[in-house]
Length: 318
Image 1 (cartoon, rainbow, N blue to C red):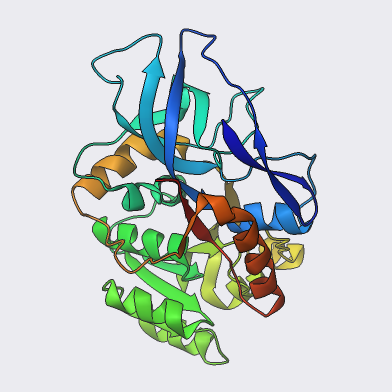
Image 2 (image 1 turned 45 degrees about the vertical axis):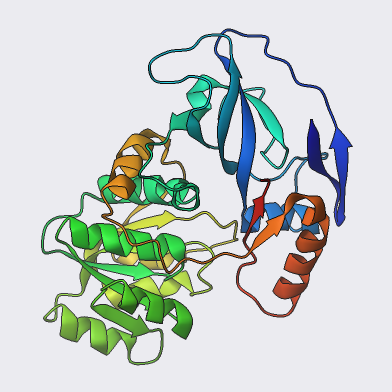
């Protein structure tokens, strides 16, 4: 099996390894598409400290080619989503042509869910978990700090559950996509933001705020957006060093919740994609061939050095 491995900062190479089915609950999957996140790029650049070597790409889709225990749910030929593996002993990613993984890390995809859409299941399940934990009510105004893919999906879900999202960002392109996906309130993060929030909420400000890591918005802006005792959810796919001033949370008695994992909502996410509840058509990541993955990691680092917020892309193995 061929895999790309990061062996040190700015060092990535292709290696051949052998993996065999050993446990009854393991499955061999042919990887067809792999999502390279900003965390993977940070591991490659050395900005994210970890133990090397690392196979990057912890989100992927593929097709089952071998299993020791078939079922009505999972069998040879099944199209599957490969979730980030949380089990002890499994720390490698999916940037390889084949992977032997536990069945618990797989979700079978219905024919109505495309591979491209399935790659956003991690975002969607995390968005669902965030909404669950903040207990967002019908008609409630929710400020979302960050209009990237995760922030956009959260906003669409809040509308689906009949809440009122207010998406805030510095990035005009992200705000434009949010507007195209029918988010009514899309605000530029500027000196007028507090006045606009007061106007939208009828003077009450927001009782719920969601901060998306990687948004580059100073999290302390929540002081301008929240009412006393508001609930703040901090979540994200990107790895950042976000710091909330304790005095702000203390003075307003804010309830701060951190949401990192949405695995429990993967099945719900699959159903929502199948039902076309979420519009993913505006999320267009560049797609590259497996053979040249090293070059695209190098290019991603250069983009970030040039000022890009994120440098995410797909690797196509077909």
